Image 1 (spheres, one colour):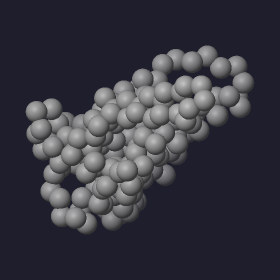
Image 2 (image 1 turned 180 degrees about the vertical axis):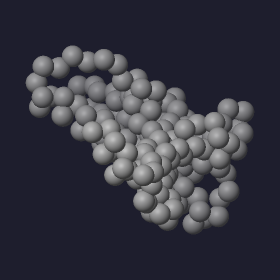
Image 3 (image 1 turned 30 degrees about the horizontal axis):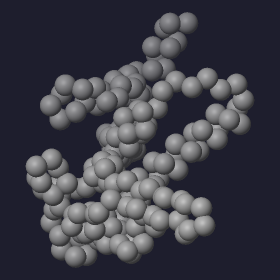
Length: 177
């Protein structure tokens, strides 16, 4: 039996795809020796294309544990698990859309960077986390007294916060109301 297999398979091609520095193996597979180089390279190229955006996607999902402080939750119902994942997905979507809106507005208004880092250092690619942290100190209180209309008190917004609200396309005067 071994003789018949060796007579049938004349050549076995081992393909190892590694990073440019040769340090990280990306893929290992075996192919028949009858496969031409263009076919083996095409499969490798397709693999690299599929993983091209993987770091961006993984970075976005890492926000589940950092920004949202996701912790183990024990749910018995499949529907509740699906609902919780849906809520997390929508939160990630809102963050991505906020970043996109802000970056497009900066590009449209030819703003290279904003002073979002501590000590007013400039930030070229604002993240949702950076913007949320900036607005964390804003407070809103509603004072209700019998027989009188409610009074809404909102922390005074800095110039930077007002600028961010405008860049996001929101009316500044309605913020906190």
